[in-house]
Image: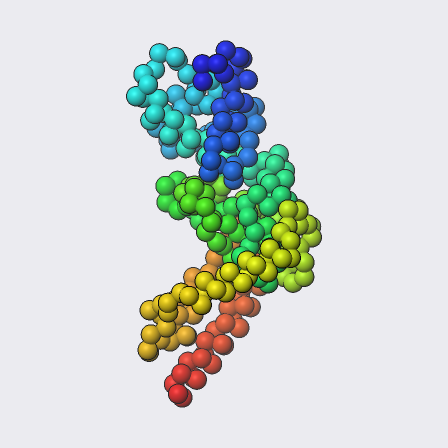
Length: 271
């Protein structure tokens, strides 16, 4: 810290962000440009969500007073991370922020969909709420339109509010050519594993499934129709509004699902 503080304010600001991004568990984040952070208009309202807002912002931009006690710096670092995360959620829905996240998406930095039929479709981070400290980040697949929990516990502990509820759907709205097809291979697949690795992964998965004991849901009296009705479905939204085309498709899919549930109920009654 002391060595880095010998440079200019701009250099240290870049260093703090680089240090934050290089920390394990922060791989989902992209770099927020310094001029965006320094524009107070972009930070409107964050002072009410972050304790010690001024000092946390000073810590990010290297304007913090060196005389602040070390025991307070620990608390301040937590607030600085919160502030940067909330700024990050606003940054990635701007044109420049979307472009940076697009680079990470093309490299599959957020992982790939575990469903076989999605053929390793790259995922995008999404929050289930824009309010911090409520829900952790999830990963959205544009092909099956479902969400998944990150594999790593470090990534799973990231607050979903640091990415917001609108980001992945706004990305596909701005770059419609990236909307994945519902079938067929993905358009870009860098860093793809070899066919042998994929087949080995599938064999290991099947082996684990064979070894897993049956769950309580498979006990006597289990109703498939009841389980289907209890399943929650993720609904893509942009600033609180459902995406029109996806909402239209989901209404049709839910109508088909309701018919299938009715058939299941009739079959279970006849058994």
